[in-house]
Length: 84
Image 1: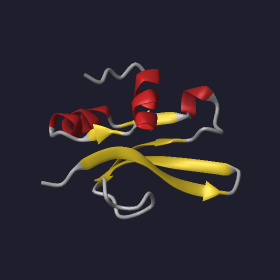
Image 2: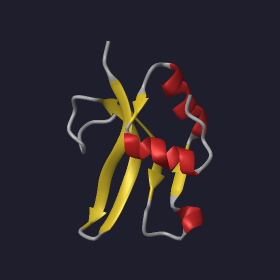
Image 3: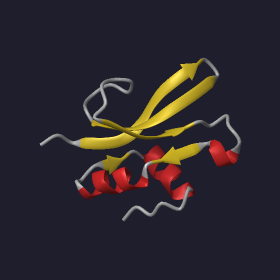
Image 4: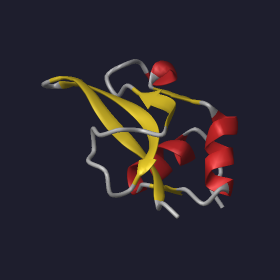
């Protein structure tokens, strides 16, 4: 069984970061191959447009045993998405 994590994958240029929230094997590199993209995080945008998440897909992956990274856990809690 793969150990699967929900974590950030970095895009953008220097000083203009853009992240996708992705599901990937925990052993793969940060910008490596993903299993599924479940949202994005754009820290430079205005607050309402910073985070967008496919909540049903995230819940599905969490139920399957995927572990969110610390940063993703904080981001999901900021949008009132409860992680058990």
